[in-house]
Amino acid sequence: MVEAHAPQRLGDSFVTEQLVIIGSGPAGYTAAIYAARADLAPVVLEGTVSGGQLMLTTEVENYPGFPDGVMGPELMQLFRDQAERFGARLIPTDATRVDLASKPFLVATEDEEFRTEAVIVASGASARWLEVPGEDALRGHGVSSCATCDGFFFRDRELIVVGGGDSAMEEALFLTKFASKVTVVHRRDEFRASKIMAGRVMDHPKIAIRWNTVVEEILGDGTVSAARLRHLPDDAVEELAVDGVFIAIGHDPNTSLFKGQLELDDQGYLLTFGSTATSVPGVFGAGDVVDHTYRQAITAAGMGCEAAMDAERWLDAR
Image (cartoon, rainbow, N blue to C red; front, side, top):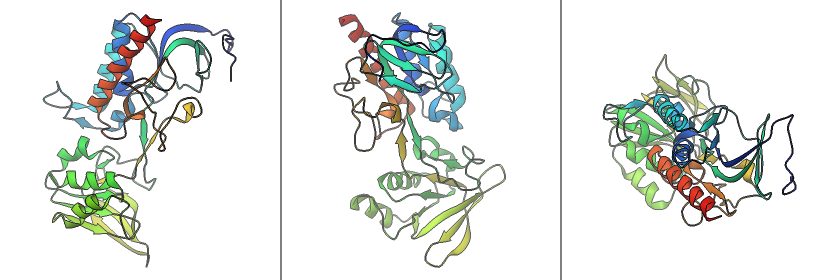
């Protein structure tokens, strides 16, 4: 840990700021917009892959203000442009180290160290993927981790949902609003989901279940056309023709940088107390790094707004 009030240098780089925002995406960029307009001159460490999970999404049709839809990367570029317009300093790099016990706080990248009076953590969460052949190439082209985001595009199509927890049950039930058939693929012989959710899935006329089965490969030329499944008890392999594969095996919050410094819940998500305040005064959390319930662009943006306003009030009070 870095001693309080003892800033260190990496080379000749040393900056003192009012506010550093860790992460981009809807939460980080919205926080930057509000903080910049409040004359806090925020520094935004966007990450080497900026824009959050919407960068993996094709068309977004449920974000207000875009009646004809908007591509996920385009929406994030608009967020970014707006933050930059108001004076946010955007740096496409990752935070590699923080010291939230020191005053002012220390946030470091590979090349720079920042001392800052306040921090907003908007580092997001990462969907878990199957890591099977075809998944990366077809992500955004039939492979998705968000039924709410992409289900509308699969009207009257046949789909697969992979997983056995409540999230998978929710995804499968939601997709029945659009799909002609949903097949839930689960590697065990019973769901981990709550009984009521599992019961709804098993009783639904549009849902079929493949127990003790895994997806070995996702097939398609440009878009998903089939999935290669393996039945674990007998190693039997089949190709199931489908138009989309929804992965619902969980998310991992990007909080490894904050372990031991901020309070986390048992799943690793950042805990907040009274709006966006974390366990350390002056540190605020927003977006999917906090939210494991909704995980929507609009809710993340709303939390980013709250975090910026909370940070501004906290700084003013000091």
